[in-house]
Amino acid sequence: MWNPEEYAKNSNAQLQWAEQLRSHLDFKGSESVLDVGCGDGKITADFAVSLPQGQVVGVDSSSEMIAYATKTYPRSQYPNLSFACIDGRSLPFKAEFDVVFSNAALHWVDDHLAFLQGANRALKNKGKLIISCGGQGNATEVLQVFSDSASSSLEV
Figure 1 (cartoon, rainbow, N blue to C red):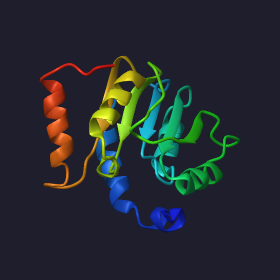
Figure 2: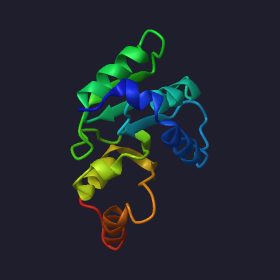
Figure 3: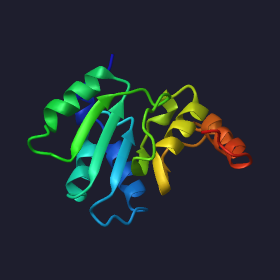
Figure 4: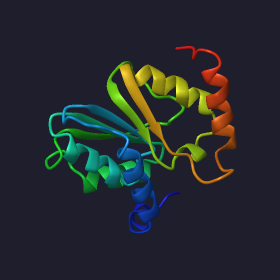
């Protein structure tokens, strides 16, 4: 369904948003990062370069995007980077990541609570969730789930 080559050529806005999000992180170089909705893998690979002693995992529900990312950013050149075709609603990780990052992808997720629960499980103690959710009015449902979750505890 997705055309990874076209996305890679036309994703400058997503790169700028990712840079803004990353400015909120103070990496030491050994952190572990999960990038949910990694798309073509460009941003995920940037994480891997900046975290030489860390581990970076990019997941996306599009098998085409994951195939492109795996081919474009091979383990032989990025030994601390891996990709997997995993839906953001069913993250299988448990206390593995210092940061769960998602940039311009959550509008594709139709069950935001499932994403939040999975992200919460994936985070280590004191881990950080860093996300962007589109433009004004585009994230109303996501923000409502966040608001509801903040007023009650997430079930893990």
